[in-house]
Image (cartoon, rainbow over all chains, first blue to last red; front, side, top):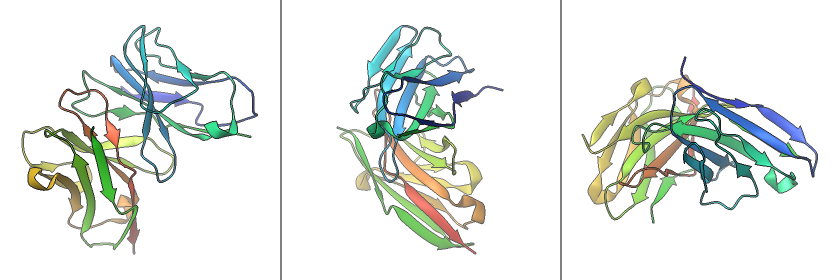
Length: 113
Length: 113
C-alpha cells in the first residue's frame, strides 16, 4: 500500500544529543516536505526537496538539516538537540507541484529534556 | 504574500447540528485551496481541494466547501455533525504557481452528544 512512514513516533532525548527523524514514502513522489507543528499555531515549513540531491530551507528558520539521497527517503537531523526543539515534526510528500494536496506521515513528537 | 486565517480556534456543536468552519485567505490571484483533518496522534489527511474546476467542492466524510472569490473565503461545512468528526481541521492555500503550501492555525471541532 502506498504510504508515508515516520519513525520514531515519539522520542524523548537529552539536551545536546544528535537525533535523526526518519521519513520514507512508497509513492514515488518527487516533492517532500518537513513541517513543524506546535499547538494552536500554523504548520511551519522548515525544509523541502524537489527531488534527489535537492534540498531547500523553508520559511521557518531551523537548526536542523535534511538530505535526499534517494527519492523515497528524506531524513531530518538535529546535530545538538535543545529544549526549544521540542515539537511535533510532520513529513509530507506530493505528486508534481502539489495541486492534488499532500500526503502526510503520522508525525514524530519530539521532547528534549 | 499568501496567508490564511481560520476564524475560531475552537468550535463546539451538538451531534446532528450543522458544522461551519471558517477560512479566509489573502492572495492577489485565486490560489489552490485545501482542507485537511487531523485526528489525535495522527498526521493530516486531505478532506477536499479547490482547483478552479467548480466553486462548490465535495470531500470525504460528507464535508463540502464553497470557494467565494468576492469574499476570499473557503468555508467548510457539513449538514449534520457526527461524534467521529471531532478533530482538528486545517485550511491551507497554495499559490497558482504551486509547490509550497501555507497552513492556517487550525480549528478544533468538538461534538457534543
